[in-house]
Length: 203
Image (tube, rainbow, N blue to C red; front, side):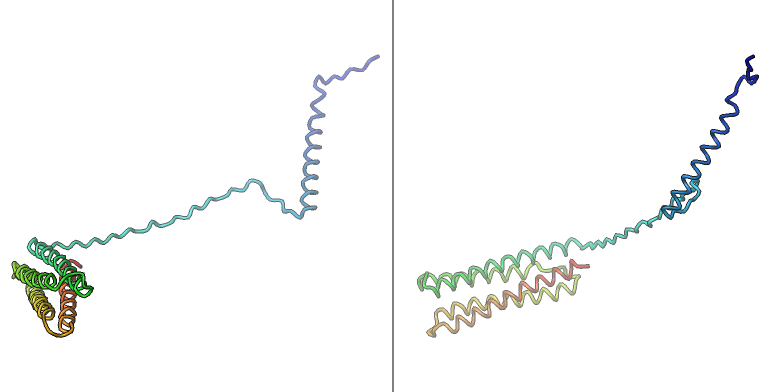
């Protein structure tokens, strides 16, 4: 006579055994791998705290210096800057004419005419430098402008001496000395203008 299992779900007893076996096998496997590889078993439920380093924003400091000059001072600085350009033009012409004479590229009469023209140019230049001048309320500018006038007068006298040296009976020494003085005074005139402009525009 057949014997029937009265339990309608015989798998209920088998499943727990299977689970226990799987857990035991997994535990044994992990321990063996950790032992062979010298690993430390740690709890996998580890929360990693993310640290965000705050970088302080650099403070941007902008320093703006604004120099406001009176309109009459600006006009004066523009005026003497223009006179500097005129002095450069006069100097170039004088040096070119002197070189042409030294190199015999022009006749004696042409050289005399050129040198006489320079006297008229520098005379007009002197009058241009004199007027209108700086605002009289600025004592420093007035004093500096007096130096410019003195240098312009010397430049004028130098051109007179250049012509005298050209027509003299020497072998060119007087003209050479006059040219050296002319170049020196032209340089001083231009440097003085640069100084005046720099002082009044640099804060």
